[in-house]
Length: 249
Image (tube, rainbow, N blue to C red; front, top):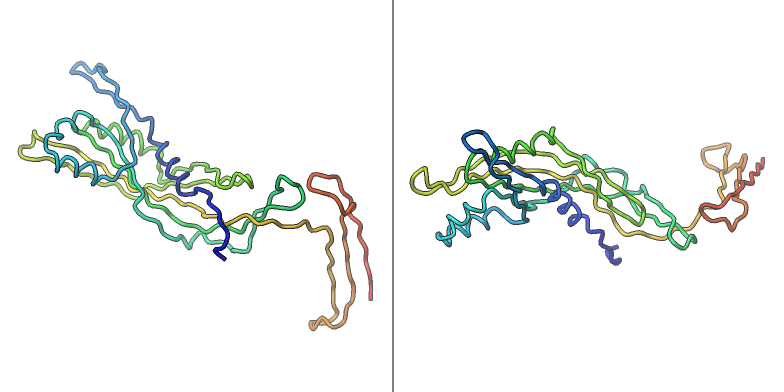
């Protein structure tokens, strides 16, 4: 155990998939005649909320420049926890034919975990933030499913449910109300992941024997059924026959 090197990039793939969901949000700004005067694609980055806010607090001269680049979004992973409700028997296996056709690739059932993600929406006015928010919320009722290529070698694809757990709101400003710095919406999500172990090589089953006994102590053999693949050199994808034999005792 723990002596075999493997890495499937499960967390990395999931974080990338999560970010891609929010990578094409566009908002409109209108004039007093309700005509669109500007369309803005909202930038997205992987960054903690505290990092952006600390930048303003440490460099006050950046406050106005920060407002100029709003709205924007950032996201981060904030936690990971085991999910016992999705646990299945650990002896179950996924199998697939490897490139040599001489053996099978086998992998035991995955271990379920939940990853907690936060998405932050920053805006300098209420309407910008609400436009972004309204383009997100209808898709989470309360979850949204993505398909993740978990283990390409075994052609395993997982549905990745993403649940919207909570929404919170902050209105940050200094001095007078007109000096508002930013409005921040925080959306808390939970992603249900599966972590897979290493892939092992496994031979083919070409002969099966089933025996029946007349007592529970299996001391008196009653009958034996044997089935064998023909030809015995067959590989996955070959056309084969089965030879059956019955023996009474």
